[in-house]
Length: 419
Ligand SMILES: [Zn+2]
Image 1: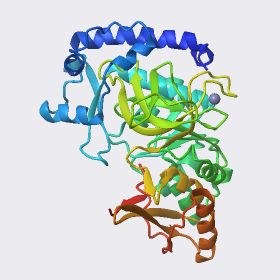
Image 2 (image 1 turned 60 degrees about the vertical axis):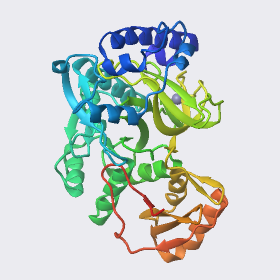
Image 3 (image 1 turned 90 degrees about the vertical axis):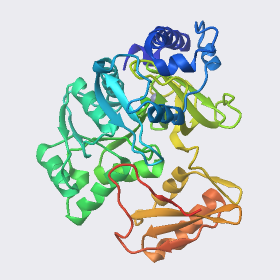
Image 4 (image 1 turned 180 degrees about the vertical axis):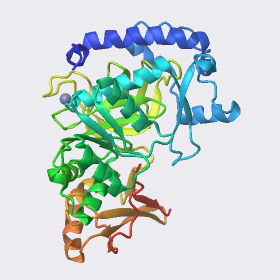
């Protein structure tokens, strides 16, 4: 653990302000996107962290429009193009994919952010890290690979393999750390069961998850831990932002890596800061990716503001329960806020639920939801009862045939929007 992770709040904030001041100077000297965006701001000399709130937000929409007008890479570049060494892009599941370039410096910064995630999960250079994903343009696992390399572990890229081949490779190599999406960890466990492979006896001792929330949802985490006989850690990151959140041994959610990011948690409607315990939208500024920075970026992630004290000893801001959902994903059903993570937390408590999805429809002006679940019909009444207790809603449940619902290697799409 770095010294900053347990430092006083005043020291952490002084560190953040100093990094921000240096970075802004670099950005304003060369970055057309932010030069244009901030040109009406009289004073860009920030004398305290509170001054950050005088700068405008940045949205994904702005980055995408900029790339549409200035193809192919847009103008959020602080260096000449030949300084950039990597191109990644967002999945595009919610619209046009965004391309993001990194310089060697900012790519090294990504790797450093990932070493924080590994170290908080107790991974050391004696571990063998297996990365179970196809190495495409998605940044998450490439950066996980770079971070593992920087930590000095033996890293095993598990691309170009099907699930059974990956399971065999893990066994053969004796991998000790698995990195994949939480959905895919559960899919691998399912394939292992079909082939009579006992994963709880495998050498995997830690699993780290990326790409979607899930590992901070207690029932989902427990299900992964039981299947693999391992300790499961969440992390949160975004292509356009960086790997900003990591889980610690306390397993109550995520810490923000405040050495490398400034977090604000704001009411999505009023834009005002939330109090401890309240849910708001996470707005982030990265402090080391000056080649293609994101300043006051509206992540669209809903988080609950925790405190600055944690049993692990860290003083970095805590997000209780991790990323709870997306601002766009929150459903209001008969007046009740329903987060997809809350549904996962209930359904994953039932070992006989293999997979599920949520069908969203509109009845006149109101959202309605129904569930399709791969499970024995004998447990439907119990699931309905748990949902009723937790959400105070009666949700219709349809039992579907085993293996009939989609499985996912990357981000799971369990919400089917028929509105
Ligand atoms: Zn902690």
